[in-house]
Amino acid sequence: MGITTEELAGGITKVILDGRLDIENSPAVDTRMKAIADGGNSVLVDMQNVSFLGSMGLRALVAPALAIRGRGGKMVLFGPNDLVARVLRVSGIETMIPVHHEMQNALDALQ
Image (cartoon, rainbow, N blue to C red; front, side, top):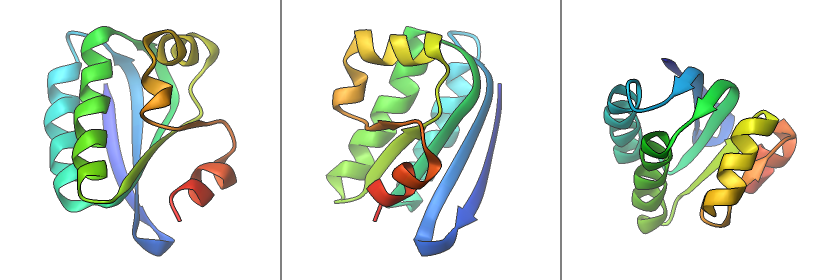
């Protein structure tokens, strides 16, 4: 699982995930997401290249989202494929973390 970040205009941190967010890869993502959550109030997680999302991967997304929201910030998920979007929907995570399929909508949600 690859995880990279870039800073966008308006103080938005874009996190790009690439690969399987499963029990094997989630600890590294969890650690990195906690660090990102500690420093960012507007976080966009690009999930276009996430091929699988398991329960431990969900945790790696929820914990930082709650931390960011607790400080008055926002985190959104962008571009999950159909399989990953279904996991987000069935688990109810999309009620806690907004999911967008258009980049502009994701950016607008962070403003």
